[in-house]
Image (cartoon, rainbow, N blue to C red; front, side, top):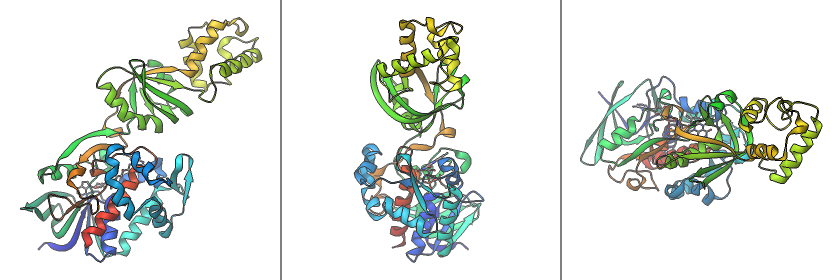
Length: 413
Ligand SMILES: Cc1cc2nc3c(=O)[nH]c(=O)nc-3n(C[C@H](O)[C@H](O)[C@H](O)COP(=O)(O)OP(=O)(O)OC[C@H]3O[C@@H](n4cnc5c(N)ncnc54)[C@H](O)[C@@H]3O)c2cc1C
């Protein structure tokens, strides 16, 4: 005999946990189904285990603009549960927060596990039946209503259903796109899911030698056909075969689009606070300091260790050359390397390294005020399953909190 609930939430990630807790708090009997043995696996990985919960952005329009055209869809949800509400919500649950560079909000404890524990305590305070290790397998509909859900732990009957199964990235955490398949079968348009916020692969073989090197204050400009297409300032790092780090992740979508039409060049300004003459002065001062050394020993004050051999190779200068014999022309070549170190993107990493999935259930078929499907009367969506993807910095979790809140509350009515 199947159990009957007011609301069934599928997927216990950040969006599903929020939705289930809210629906129950609003008085509904709720079942929350999670296929893993443990909810919120991906949440534990967020912010390198520190969980960048949201953004301390006072201007809502700026927050929304970060999502491009689709951002407008979020106005209503954010009016119901905004960025400050998120901070208040977690503080009330005993998770004090702090703001770091780039307006990023983290728990004071720097522990994503504390965020998950708080969410679980919120859910468990309410009449929510949490089924772990139970995978939703099939959704049955009749006309424009869902009538039944088949799961590995039996059938579930509910008045309303909330799909919060996430996207396709980091599938080991459970985000295998099941919800996108069902949405499609139920008649929804699914915008092709693509990996977003991904590291990039690059052609330059010297990158391998610098693997793991983090560049803290770098300005990266993206060029195609010698025309600047985008730029970001902040932190980037070299990987085994390319680049990653916050600014690369944020540029990845643009780089992917540009790669579809041709070659993409990244120009790294390693000294963005100095212009060419200022940097030249600085270089000359260092050369004076090391005037009796070999050229290969003169760059240590200006460059991280692992980049020194790369610069020597790329500059074409004899590493054993005496510093006091480096010519003006040769110094110019070096300045170019500091200000416009070139790397060429050859592709993006796939879903297994993508922080988020772009694409998803078309926003045109969802009511922004309630997260209810415009096609299936008793179906709601929340979180990354939606066709929304923001930059790094807490934007994507805020989507989960706001859409989870709205879906849970609306479904409980
Ligand atoms: C490495 C990494 C770091 C990140 N860091 C940040 C950050 O610091 N800040 C930020 O804002 N965003 C960050 N993100 C993005 C953020 O984690 C996601 O946007 C968010 O987890 C999406 O939440 P969700 O609830 O929609 O989906 P998910 O977190 O993907 O959860 C979906 C849940 O549904 C379950 N499920 C799927 N199919 C079924 C089924 N058939 N039956 C039952 N259950 C099912 C899954 O097991 C999973 O638990 C990061 C992502 C990654 C990968």
